[in-house]
Image 1 (cartoon, rainbow, N blue to C red):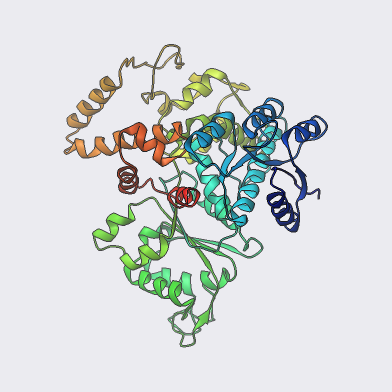
Image 2 (cartoon, rainbow, N blue to C red; image 1 turned 135 degrees about the vertical axis):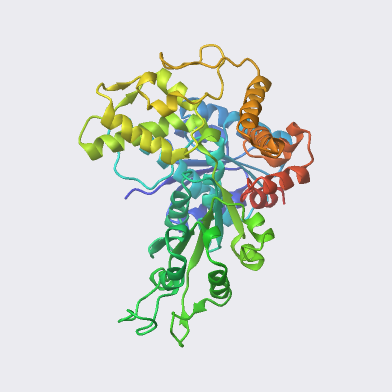
Amino acid sequence: MPRNKIWVIDDDRAMRWVLEKTFKEEGFDVTSFEEAQSALDQLSLDAPDVILTDIRMPGIDGLTFLGKVKGQYPDLPVIIMTAHSDLESAVSSYQTGAFEYLPKPFDIDEALALVNRAILHITKLQQQESAKTAQPIQSTEIIGESPAMQEVFRAIGRLSQSHITVLINGESGTGKELVAHALHRHSPRSSKPFIALNMAAIPKDLIETELFGHEKGAFTGANTQRQGRFEQANGGTLFLDEIGDMPFETQTRLLRVLADGEFYRVGGHIPVKVDVRIVAATHQDLEKLVQDGRFREDLYHRLNVIRIHIPKLAHRSEDIPMLAQHFLARAGKELGVSPKILRAETQEYMQKLPWQGNVRQLENTCRWLTVMITGREVYPEDLPSELKQIPIHQSGEGAPAPHNLDRISIHHWDEMLGQWAVQKLKNGEMKILDIATPMFERTLINAALQQTRGRKRHAAELLGWGRNTLTRKLKELGMDSTEDDIEEEVEG
């Protein structure tokens, strides 16, 4: 298998030596350059997988070099390094197309994690490109190029060498288990088992047996000893989905396992030692469950070491055409038919739908289209009837709609909000301000974070808040993630 090629460009000889040595030890093919012009000359003959370049160098500076690289290879990840970590440099780097901005001095492991994430990113792009001409195989990789999903990729990249506990939160159908799989696959435990258990899918009186196993004779029908999921996952990752549904008494046992690394099988008296990484997920507000006395506060803090928030599909609408193409190709392969093709107006219409069921609903829709429509191309009117009855998010000039869809012409967002409020009140709902305010704040926060590529300090300025206010709001709305840790490390 060919080695990934890394280029390092820096006029600091010591920096080149350290990076070259580190990357070679990790199995990369590394080439170093003292100045950017030599790299540009070589770029006309060959291109690497990832470039790390300083900003301030003799001759061509890093940002000018970055612009020239993007002109030839738009998708090539370029990581900008600089000892002058001012806001202007950071903003200019991202505006010019940098994959990431790395202030000096930095931990060498941080640079290595960034390179691994960049390679993951470019590999994903290549797979998506090849999927346009070939039907993809069943894949557990996450698809998405939106800023919101790039933050998720960034978190996975940062955690690629970690054994730390992770809590994933997001609505049902957003792909929390895919993220858990990715965390495992890109971790030092990747060669060991990944075991998943959904708390909501198991009767409460069987959860402890499922988790910890049982001894022979522990209860009626226990004719043999049985391993639980903890033992099955030993050395690997245990994914506890819908952790908010775990019974309170089981939470106590789980807390002890996290603290001591050992447990007793049901009916057992000999401790069982395990080495397991816990990744938990929920669509619920665990903080509220703690306040209501339904979830142990000490367990919550044990699980909430690093949090990754998975955005709802409506908040990453730019990913919908790519996801739909993937699901249509997969459905076509499963059914032995040519994959359906979404027309441009159908893609645009689908991007404006709310997708309450998130990615899972989109996947099911693509499967339905593959079975139900006769033509190769999918028109807006071919969509399932339930999707043609939903008001779309925006209806500006030229917004596409099915021929038989009653379009709602909304010229201002406040008109749409007013219609929503009237409908809620007609339905007899109370305290609609408590419903609308978080929705309103979440929408504006997402817009600001997308505009600033996830940089919270800048996003807070756009919103007219202080950084602490934004951090508090993100936590209140269940939107906080590892971005806090990442930004604090970068700024430090």
